[in-house]
Length: 193
Image (cartoon, rainbow, N blue to C red):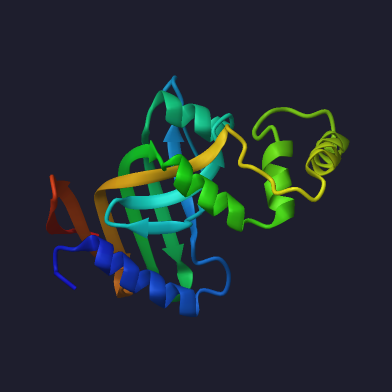
């Protein structure tokens, strides 16, 4: 691993987290910003990553989807308590290709595919019966046929411009390795805890 390659460092840490984290090592906090400047955050699941970025999937008509359309910047945070580590990522968002989204959608369980159609994510409903009716409607509509990806549901890639690797140390003298992107190159600095 190059000392100035945060993607390789992330891959190494992620592999360790998959072995030691008891539940969902791929869970990450996603922070976005509304048009009025109000930030919001929620947990989402990392589905893939490479040198081009970190990919998750969502309903683009949800609160996060609308915030992303308005301001295509985001921050991600992984916290692996078992390893006493965190990774913070700041970057710019873009949609994955339709082919990539279709390919991933096809791997989802059928119930999750129907749920993507049925849920008006982030919008108000009168009661849980509304969701149950919508699930039944789409289950009947698709029957046993393959379920196509909804046009409002896709993947988003966070192209990282900054990455920080935080390791817990005694007396709160934590190690903070900060990488900033300059074109195709990364610059590494150490930060005070």
